[in-house]
Amino acid sequence: MGIIEIIVIAIVEAMDCFAVAIATGLCKSGIPYSRAMLQSVSFGIFQGGMTLLGYSLGSFAEHWFESIGTPIACAILCILGGRMIWGAVRGGDDEAAETVSKNLTLANILLMSVATSIDAFAVGISFAFVNANMVTATTAIAIASFVMGVIGYEIGRHAAKQFKTKIPEIIAGIILIGIGIKMFF
Image (cartoon, rainbow, N blue to C red; front, side, top):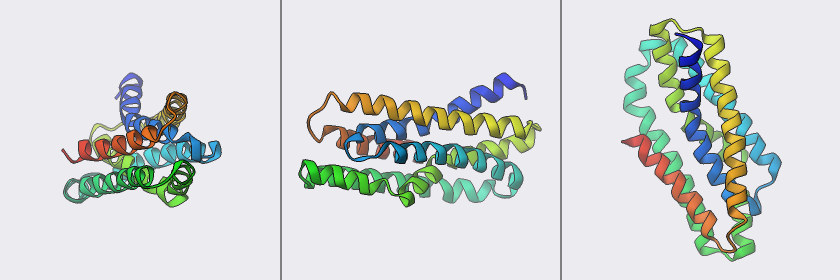
């Protein structure tokens, strides 16, 4: 497998991180910048790590992953998205910002990182069969996920400035639920 193929796969793998980071950026009013950067770092670590784990486990885990991994990732993202929408709808402006900030806890960052990296696990399994250079592949996927996380957050943050309502938080929740449903199907 050549470097061009690895870079394309890395960018494709990072797209879920990009979408989740846009959702985070849309909620900027209550999210510290350092927390959003921690999310991007977590995306990179989990995407690279899950790719390497998938490669290591190879075909042994393929059957388990397909039957259990995808519904778990779907559920995590749908629950987080639903909580985000619920917090925006039921609270006042200050309350909604506080809820969003609390929802981007370290535990939620880790859950979103795991949910977005399930596909990377499957890619790692496929890399075991094509004899890919795993140092290059893992590094490319981790860096692409981090960069897409930062870019997505900034895009979402700038878009959120255009709104003076709770709409960004609701859109963010819908995005997370959409990603979860997309994973399921």
